[in-house]
Image (tube, rainbow, N blue to C red; front, side, top):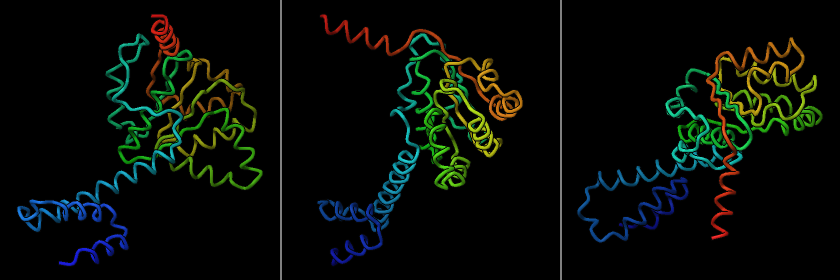
Length: 251
């Protein structure tokens, strides 16, 4: 059997997984022990695995997550009030099916961004799309997008993402344009997609942070009332890491 033309055809058809698997089969010494169906199954399995890996790579690249984080690495030992049962519930991804939001609040350094990115990473692994947005940079990007004509496309992209992260909510004052932009984004996503917010500010102070009462009511109505809440506390985990590093250095 002429395998080289078949290998070339597999590459031409962009079946790179099957191409690699067939190359491996050619080098197998016990190839005769496999039936045709078993060999074909190995080829198809490799192609499906590699396509799934490529799709995951694309979703993670599009998500632009701030940190590389996985739910399997969540630290429940650090005393920060992290509800393990709730986190396990969230990692199932059911909140995405129900179009519910997640609000993670707490002092600096307790792992809010890390947890947000871990949940987004899990969503990408489950075939969902995610997008990380730092609120201060978003506020800078939107006026530029309006000026160069990208604003409608940005809104469409934000509306389509299964999960959007608004990180560092409350660190930068909002202006009138930003309030309306946030309302537009959240209105497009309300009861359609899930939004995750991290903030050092308690949720009870968000109305005052937004400042304009009418827009604050509208924004929070779309964000808070259908959301899971994770309220973290305790010392910064960065401080703990720094202390450990200093301790090890002095030994």
